[in-house]
Length: 261
Image (cartoon, rainbow, N blue to C red):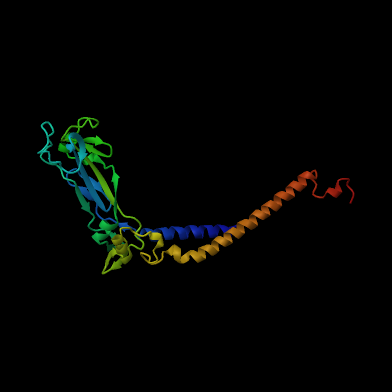
């Protein structure tokens, strides 16, 4: 019983140490990024502000109003279909400058080549007063429309995305003191597709503690299973003895029911 409990504790401790070992190798973005206009912050590897304006667009012989990220020149449009002279607020991107893995800097090309953008809803509690008077929450972002369901030409809507990194095993390697794209990743980018990290033979770092200790852990697991099986068989034998006693009227030996020797 004590040995079995000790094995369970050993496996749990090995898992905790391995988890801590892996955590130290996770890429860290460094200082938070901030949109200086809206004071929106992100603690990921990049921050993107996307701006769209409600504008007139010419489709063949008709006009329709659309949300568009680029300014649409309406100088040749029919009267009554005039767009503002330009976007008053540009879209922008900010990149992490001190991203690191295990204390070593990550080359900017790694972020641009491997990262992907995902939408997030920021906290607008730090919105400057002038923008708070102009914009209101709309979905995951902000809109300047008085009624977001009925926008007018010239209205703006703004949304933000964060840059996150996928698992980097096999995609980066430490060269000249910096984490840079591996040759495999460069070939995959040139081919238009990244390889599955699970198929890469060259690991990002040295084997983790869990990988180094797995034979010992497997042996401990086998011993634990054998001990549990032996315990289960003893319990089954004990229950079978109780059932036999109950069936014989509470006597352990059925031949002694008449009191004869």
